[in-house]
Length: 141
Image 1: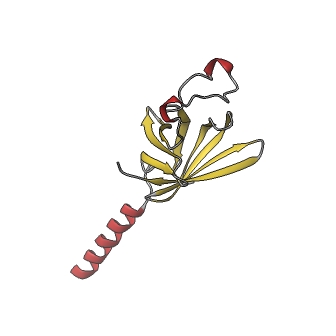
Image 2: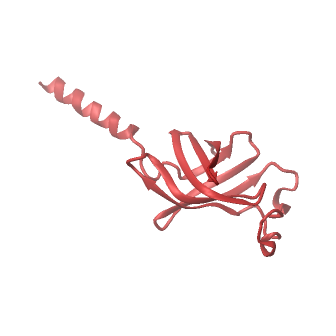
Image 3: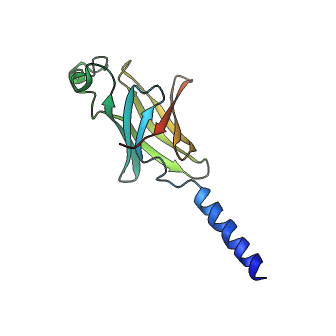
């Protein structure tokens, strides 16, 4: 009987540690192609993400040249919030309801994030029924 309780306790611990929690997407991430790094963090009751590093030779001098709002075209890309308003939905195991901004083409889209595993997330932007998905990998400094 003692062995049975030990096995049940072990199973419960493994199951609990394998379940996704709302903060599983917070941290430092890199685009799959290595072109940029991002940080996702919780702000109030939502999750946000910003660009923290660019491989582009312009680096810190890169600006938001393709923004549809001409008054924002001189703002730096580094530090730019590109994910806003994400909320965790445990029943779907996703973070959605947010917005994604792509400075590459100046487009805003509906955003969702799905955790593939502890070190991989999929970011999806959807606009006019068309979806594009990018993979980000966790990294450490």
